Each structure stands twice: as structure tokens, then as C-alpha cells.
Length: 440
Image (cartoon, rainbow, N blue to C red; front, side):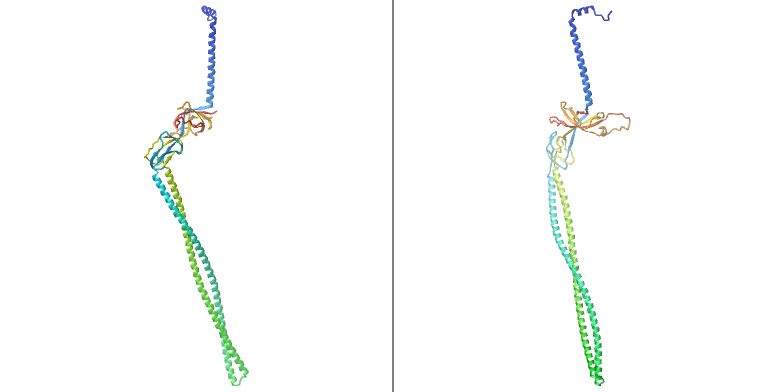
């Protein structure tokens, strides 16, 4: 007996209506096709998801970051005008706040006046230095020349004095020799005169001949002549000695005068050298005034800077936020007046450390903004932080203490925009984004 036999009534009906089996077969075929399509779509979706997982890394722990500059005054003063409002866009160099410049203008005027005064005094000191240098140099040259001439005169007179002293000594020797000759001549004359007197007495007694008397008389006259000549030689030697001594005395007097002239010339040289000290003193004065000029110029520059600081300008282009200053406020250096959110924005994405295996700087990224889901911006990986975010937190974890539980760490990755930021969308630091980095 066959299993599950069909009822006779159903068999009869099938035999009566054979065309009802075709629609059933077609429906079954459609179901099979839908199942195959769904299976293929699921396989394709699985392949796509696998590829996406391998080719891209993404995270929803990402936020826009940007430079926020606190605008503060650099000088003390009262606010005159505020030129911006909250959330206003400003460009680099735009005037934000004006402080009262009256005090700083007065200080600048005073500093410039002092600079002009020091410049005038320095110019006078330079002129005095030039005149003193010229006068002192000429006086020193002249004094040194006079000293050299006086010393040369002294040397010449000393040589003449030596010659005069030698002449005196020679004259004294000649005088002594002449006196010796005169003494010898006197002795000879006395002897000859005595002989003549004796011969004359003897001739009177006819004891000698006339010839002997004449000869004795001749000898006496010759001795007397020799005595006269010797006396004249002595007188001449005495005169020579007197002239030599007079020359010696005059030379000594001239030498004393020349030595006095040398002393005077040395005094003039010392005076001229004292003028050189005055020149050095004036040079020191000029140097001191030159240093004072540089110092005063620095003070003028500082006064100019302080005056320029009364106009507070935007250091970067961006949006004004948290404005807390109004006209009339007294502000101090470093006081926060407002914050400037710069137009330079980037993304900090905190990827899991397991997602960084193939991530490198320069890889392209697509950035979706949570506030504007329809907005897609292109970017690139700029850098990867050297260390996890937890390590740089206020209270970093101490894994060596207590029970250790391993937690996958997050590492900040900086992503910069390569597309220009659209002006119609308000983007700012702290906004959430979802970056997708292509790692393959």
C-alpha cells in the first residue's frame, strides 16, 4: 500500500482541472529567485562590509579642534571703544578694542624730547672733542719739537762747555809754562846783570878786556830782552786764560739757560699730555652720551610700542566669543577681554590602539559632521600622538598598583581638512564628527 495516498476526490479534481498546477510552479520559481537574489545580496553586503572593515578605519570618538586665542591688553588703560560683538567674524589685523592713548602719547613725546636733548649734547661733545683733539695734538707736537730742540741745544752747549773747559786747562798750562819761562828769564837776567856789573867793575880796574865787558853787557841785554819776552808771554797767557774762562762762564750760563728751557719744554709737554687726558675724558663723555642715545632710543621705541598697544587688533582670522569688555572699563595687562576662535580647524579622532596598525600620516580621510549629516569633507591624517590620551590626562592610570584590568586605549590622531570649509556651515571646536580613514 503506498504512503500518503491521495484521496480519490482530490485525484478526481486534479484530473478534472490540469491547468491549476502552472501558477503554483511559477510562484515557487519566483520564491526561489528571490531567495537566490537575497542570498547574493547578503553575500555582496558581507564582502562589502569585510572590505570596508579592512580598507577603512572609523570612530565616533572624534571632535573638531581649533586654536582659541585669549585677547588680552598688553598695557593698562581705560577702554574707549569696542569694535566687535559676540560671534562676529574678524580678519587678521582688524581693530577690536581701543584704549585711551593720552598717557602713552605724553610719554612718547617726553621720550622723544629727551632723545633730542641727548642728541644735541652728544653733538656738542663731539664738536668739543674734535676741537680739543686738534688743539691738543698741535700743542703736543709743538711742545715735543721744542723739547727736542732744547735738548739738542743743551747737548751742543755741553759740548762747547767741554771745549771751553779744555781751553781753560790749556790756557792755564800755557800760563804756567810762560810763568816758568819768565822765572827762568828773570833768573837769567839777574845773573847776566850781576855778571855785567862785576865785569864793569873789573874793567874799571883793567882786570878784563873791553871785549869781555861788551860780551857781558850783550848777555845782560839779551837776558833782559828774554825777560821782557817772557813777561809778554805771561801776559798773553793770562789774557788767553781770561778769555777761556770768560768763554767757559758764558757757555755755562748758556747751558743753564738751555737746561731751564728744557725744563720749560718738558712742562709744556706735560701740559699737552694733560690735554690728551682731557681728550680721553671728552671721548669718554661722547661714549657715555652715545650709550645714552641708544638707551633713549630704546625708551622711545618702547613708548611707541606702548602707544600702539592701545589698539588691540586680531592676531588671526576667526570668530569673537565670550566678549567681556565694554567702553569705560579699566583693564589690566593680561586681563581676558574676549576669545578668538581661529578659522584654522582640524579634527582630533581618538582611535583605538588596535586600529592604528596600518594608519600612517598622509592617508586620506572622509569626515562627516554630526550637526550636518549631509556634509562630507575630505581630509588627511596629519600626525598620530606619541602616547594614549589617558597617559596625558590629569590623573593618568597607575597600572602597577591595585588589580590590573586591561582596557583598550584610545590614541588621538590629528586629521586636517583638505577641502575648504564651507562658509554657510558653522563649524567650531568641540563639534562631534565621524572620520573614516582609508588605510589600504
